[in-house]
Image (cartoon, rainbow, N blue to C red):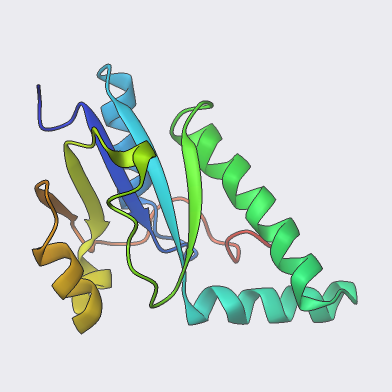
Length: 147
C-alpha cells in the first residue's frame, strides 16, 4: 500500500487557495483515491453571510447552496466520485469515519495547522499527515462557494 493510495484532503475553502485540492487531484490521476473534508471556518461563514444578504436568503438556505456548489467544485477539481464531507470549524476531524477507514495519508494546508486543537488532532492521526505548502494563491479569486 502506497502513502497516497487514499488521501484525506482537509480543505478550508478560502478564495485563492487550492494547494490541497491539487495534491488530492494528483493522487487520483496517479490511480489513488481522495476524500475531501471541508472545514467550515469563520471566513466561510462570513462569505455565507455576505452571499445571504446579497441574494436575500436566510443563512441556512445560503449555506446549503454554497455547500452544494463547493461539493461540485471539488468533485470537478479532484474526482467526480470523491466523497465531500463538510465539518464545522472546531469540530473534531472524523478520521475514524468508515469512509476514511482505509485512508493512507491526510493532506492539509500548512497555514491551517496553526489552530492548537487541530494540531493535537493531527498529532494523533493514525496515518501520516502531509502539509501542503502555504504558497502563493492559486486559481480561484472569487469567494469560495458563493460565486
